[in-house]
View 1 (tube, rainbow, N blue to C red):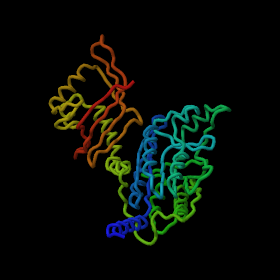
View 2: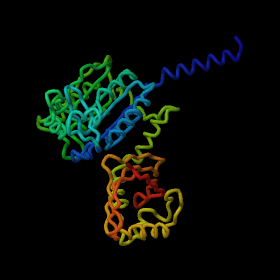
View 3: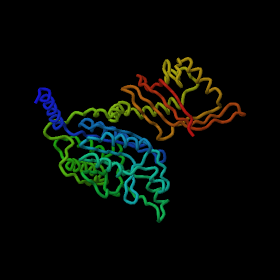
Length: 409
């Protein structure tokens, strides 16, 4: 055998040894939905999701996360999760927010859902078992944590409109028909309602955060500890429950050493890399929405120079053209001067965040507008526009560095 052939075989052997020694990748999808367009606001799901995502990263998971997602955003996140699971050994799905069961099937409720009648269920909600199927087909171990049985106004609405030939909505979630190599944890027993909590986190999320990283603890023992804490905190009002079909013991943190460090996403798949960046601005999605509602959609037209400096800084690119602050002040002043009154609003569930590094992000959303002209012979201007803003994080808060919009039908 020639020298080059020997070296090639030796190199291949090293690669195989490295592959065997490398622990299986662990990938998680973490979703928190709290700000619902037609069901009020839950205080804690986004906090729960952010904290769980942080904890999972600290014990070696690659995390894709999203908060206050509409139907389209939720489906896109599930697609990203599916791509990221390729080659992974463990998949985990955590969801906090509204969930419901209809005829024994469990659904995630997006924040833009309009579930006033059962026939809309397939169009407006996302079946949880479809996420579980994706995980079971691609990983040996599938873990699901559902803090999604909170008191649900959609269940009451669907039950009121149900007929003998339509679906019937029930409180809480139902157990799954079958699982393969899976472990599914519910924040409360099947058919029961869980509590949102009065602090930063729900009782279930608080207990999970407290116990998930204990070294050498099996997932079954972890759930016993979680259940004990939740039962105590809720004074027997809530009892977490699980079902599973794992074929071997699973530990979040092995007992024979420290927790593994989080690994970067595998090349060349871009999705986990985007998710890692997403965390840097994902924490600030609430502040971005606050910036839009408080500043961009409600500018102080009485002091336009100060408003522009605060929102746009010294210059910005608007519809592809760079303007300095003085020019932006003139454009904005002239625009608002022609209206007797006006109102701008953020369409619930439409905000999409795309990060571009540590301190920059793109925010796209649907904006409702209604302008009443001073000239009574002129037509009132109402409608919706798709707005895209390039944002940069400054010391004093978010600032717009680019702006475009397009009318929506």
